[in-house]
Image 1 (tube, helix red, strand yellow):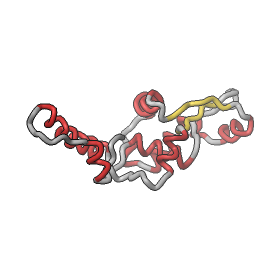
Image 2: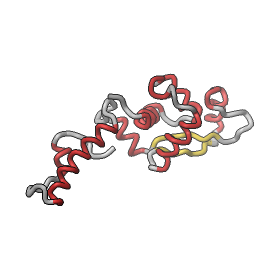
Image 3: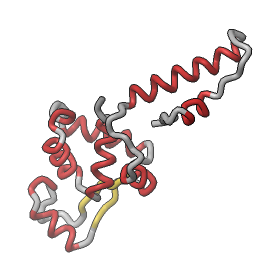
Image 4: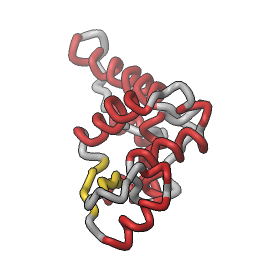
Length: 152
């Protein structure tokens, strides 16, 4: 199984640090061509970065530091021109970065398999409330006992 694109973006930002949108897009398309080869820059911004920003997983902040701006002006993928006085850098939040930097995260597990496991266990839990079984079932405890994730 493969990791989702959002997981790859978050783990890349956690390991590499803040990047401009242009740098991030170019780095991901060269490093993961199979996953990001078919994604346009517009779709990358409008879908992936927008969703992660709305969920509070990443933040986009202005950078006005002259040393950083000078370094970004030298890089053609950053798209920071000499006229600009501010550069917008994408970074991952600290709690998300800690999760992706630790060895606990398994990049080989897809979101689809996690959702399927949770759905299977919650169905067993619903059977108690609908009267199909007499034994209550705690789906979250069952998944944790088996060593599976309970959320994305």
